Length: 81
Image 1 (cartoon, rainbow, N blue to C red):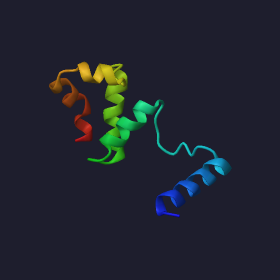
Image 2: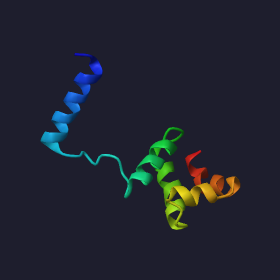
Image 3: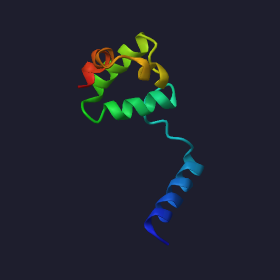
């Protein structure tokens, strides 16, 4: 058995026994993914500020973010670096 298969077996065993961990903060899968990307460059407290900016303007949506001009997006996520 290769390592990947073994790790997947461990993961599925823990998921079956413990259920989803819900360890990453976020209200939607998109918000979780965006937070994971933004935190690569800064502390979580700064990511929270950027997420607050996006949430406050109704922009926690992939299509809405894509439609934003780069300068506006940069302004909103500036706290995250």
